Image 1: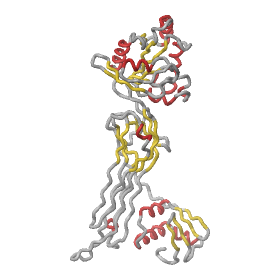
Image 2 (image 1 turned 30 degrees about the horizontal axis):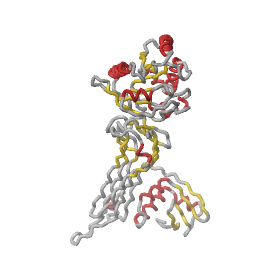
Image 3 (image 1 turned 135 degrees about the vertical axis):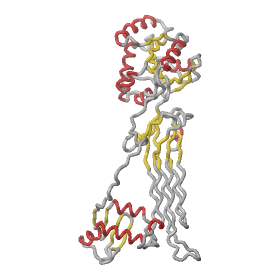
Image 4 (image 1 turned 180 degrees about the horizontal axis):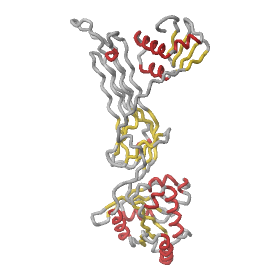
Length: 436
């Protein structure tokens, strides 16, 4: 089974917590703080592996979480950072942020990689908070949480040559004849519902990858039929072989089929209209095919005189060798570059920005008898600080006082014993004190 789209959840590892510790050595008086920093959490990295061809593995494993960093240690030892999590993906995978729809990366070459979820920083130990005024702080930080998000993965087939055309024109039969691929072949529309790849040996030490792509119908660029599920794969091919049923066995006109398919390609992506194209006039072993081919040549010459038209028969193998040699010759003239999505070059350069000023805004609401303080700065501080020490409480109190929160609480009627709540942290207001 071919899987070309998947949605996964990724989370960078949390940073390790900092430690509160003091030196306690027999002959070292006033040893001071010795709590180390926590280690950095691991990143989640997607890396291209050319040995993979589908997103099948992501049907069974949808969650990827990197390990968290180690906690800080005593004797001023920092915790170890966690190893990054490497997730292997096939070439041709486009990574899209599921919430914003932004393209994170378009990975096409073996070994390419991108960090999709960064690990959190480790928390600082109490050695980081020592000052001349407070040489023995009982203060440390928790590790920062790792980045997390949902990612949509879309795989676009990486093939040199793509077979396009209406359903039942003989694309799958052609692929089975020129390669060792064994696509499903049947006398009904949409026999091929997923792309099939085959390695084609031309015979003069040249080879290329050919893809039998699901059949197109009118309106495919709007998602009708297999629609976008098909068209996303055409973008990756360097040469298009347009297979046309010259026998008219489906009751359709070969020239109209050629016009409609090209129009669908152009409407989906104008670049596809400029892609090198070879017309494989198939089913030439059928009655009336020669007559239809003559009419087809006349009509296409008026529209696109440079178009290469090669009569073939997948059943009798007529003209197959000439088609392969022509495709190989066109490939030799095209640089081996694949079309990629336009992604901002954020990973290729460093951008230096001024640090944003601390946001000191806050709001206060009433919940029964309690006052509830909403402040992004204070809530972030509560997440990072280990609030089980006296020094941490004092630091919180000083920050709130400098921001003007205590004055606002007092103005709104807070008195001794009034309950104040910030996120999950709850305490009593003490009038006239330097802390709560």
